[in-house]
Length: 161
Ligand SMILES: Cc1cc2nc3c(=O)[nH]c(=O)nc-3n(C[C@H](O)[C@H](O)[C@H](O)COP(=O)(O)O)c2cc1C
Image (cartoon, rainbow, N blue to C red; front, side, top):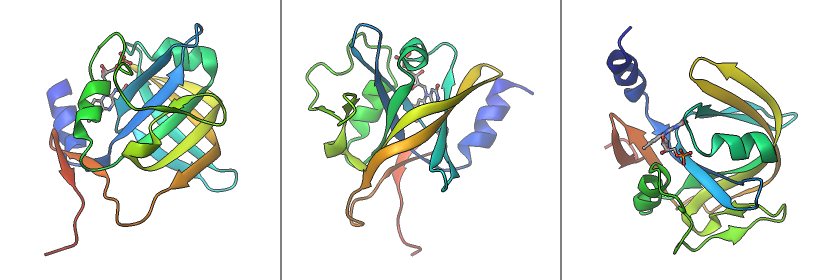
């Protein structure tokens, strides 16, 4: 199958946008924008995220074995664009915090966040799947709307008209 066909198929499936944040071996904050995030298990609480082998955040994730999933709030699409870039320091000039576990995260820009410890790493094609055990997290009030990605555009979730 052509890659274009694959992305068109998967692009027809709306997905929330999450920025994955971690630190590298020098303690520098790193992160990337993702939609390949899924709930896996409630007991124990597990989620997964798929990261491309070409990602410059991948070595940091593999080294630190911990990460935060920041589910981005509508209105902060520029953060999704920033973390989808190859910028050297994506955190420069950004209001970010340190989690209890000492990881960079973006609670002010999220509808929810989850701090995870890597439980398993699975190689799958051109991506690496990280199964993370959720150690801490929070969901913000229901009136906050998430950013969703659908047919290569950012959108919002709304009630049926
Ligand atoms: C909406 C959107 C969703 C994305 N989802 C993923 C994803 O699930 N996994 C992934 O590895 N890259 C994903 N990307 C691409 C990365 O964000 C992009 O390649 C980024 O430059 C990686 O940064 P890094 O090399 O600094 O880690 C997505 C990009 C966008 C715009």
